[in-house]
Image 1 (cartoon, rainbow, N blue to C red):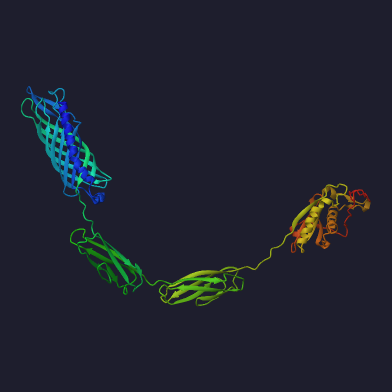
Image 2 (image 1 turned 45 degrees about the vertical axis):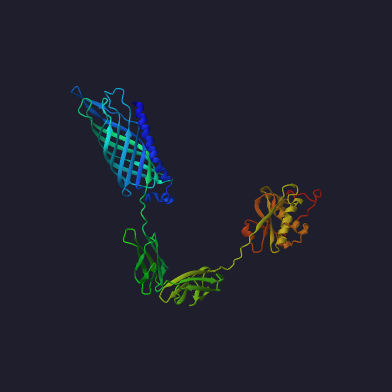
Length: 561
């Protein structure tokens, strides 16, 4: 019997596939407008579903056996086919007829297990919720099933109640025309009476049925789009008395019907798609114009819209101003110019104020005087008033510069001459000093008003040396001698033409065998810039001749020439 059952199941599935092929072809070749209809605004009138079905019955058949009741269980049928046709009254509710076939061979012990066969048909209501991508649904059905009986007894028909639901997925190309039923899950209750004989009995079966397959959608519920209406006011912002035009634009009108337009609002007159508004008596504020279009009494054949416009009060004036020149010396004057604008060309008057100094004028120009004003920025306010009392202000400024103060010059160090190489003649200006004295000469030539201060220094040991003997002994003025010798070398041996009066000699307090040279520009005070020096009495300290080392005329303890 296994072979017969398999062949019967194969025939059922083959017939279901052949029956669905024409519908699938028709859906694939459906006109483009249907395919392009918005998925969430379309739903098929007919849904034809075919596919695989699995059923798992649970229950018992109670049969008389020797005066005793025998419970015979059912087992699941893994192979089956299902076919359903649903006709929808609208997008959501319809009627459905379902037929299913579930066949399986008898068990090895036909006396203990009923023959597995649950096939039948049902009719009932179906409800769905179509969306762009998926459609969930539920249904409730009443029908009959042919159920296998125990012990070689023939199959018997019994009443069947079915309730369940499922989910369809709409393919992107065909939308609702060709869908995949991802699953359909049903509960079935079947009651069947096999008769009063030994092999008979009654069965109360609770079954779970799972199905999946292809859904073909035919027809559709694409209602005509409702009429739309949009209103635009031009211009949207006006002054009292300015004209306003409102235009209404209708969409999705039926070309076979004649639309009728009506208008409402303050001062609105019009028929057809445009209306005008008289605004001469309207105060400042926002106003609304309404329009309606109607092409029939049915829902969706009427639409309305509104547009707003604003009546503005007269706008206040605006002003800008500037000063020329914007920078002046103390006591000078500047001209202030104003540019006032009234959007409605109202008469204008001008006035001015200044934070310092004084300003005079009542027209578009005014004269600013800086007399008595401190240096810095003087703020100026320009005011304008129209004949409605509306005002505006603008600001500018004039900068009064401070008098120029020449910077105070200062003395600066030039270079230093060392006297630590010739121990026998510690005050002699040697040839290595020429580089420094050339720099001093160049500085004096570059600034004819400058002078040079030559500051001689000595060590603490040199300060203790004496000149002469006995009561004629006196301190050796080595620092002063170095300064005087440097000046003499600069004025005479450099042949620079430097006037001796431009060179001053001094001594300092630094411990060292050097002479420091400073450039003092005109106006600089050397004593302030370089404090702690002492002027040399050039009548007492005379320059020494620069003799070679072999020419010694005298010997002094001080290590003189």
